Image 1 (cartoon, rainbow, N blue to C red):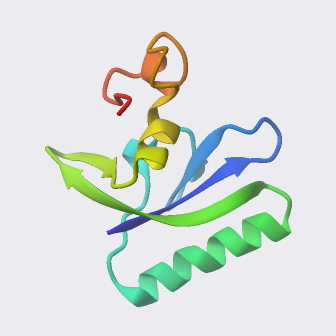
Image 2: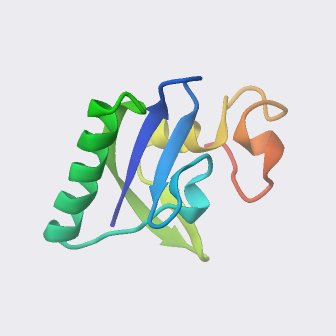
Length: 102
């Protein structure tokens, strides 16, 4: 499975694409895809958002669903989803207890 992630251009916040909602600040609501055609569709959404100067560093990342939660497979993406791994009082992990740093 994959999700589309980027950084919002206005403030650098890590964001994920959610169908019908646009770019959201937590991975929990991100649109999951597993078929190549759906991946291409998400990639096209990211490319258009980049061209419109909405986001930068657009990427499709591998994830798994564990106990109903979306968990990125790479450490870098887990940190982006939660916040700094050495300061649990900062980042998304401080705002939302469902997201934990690696």
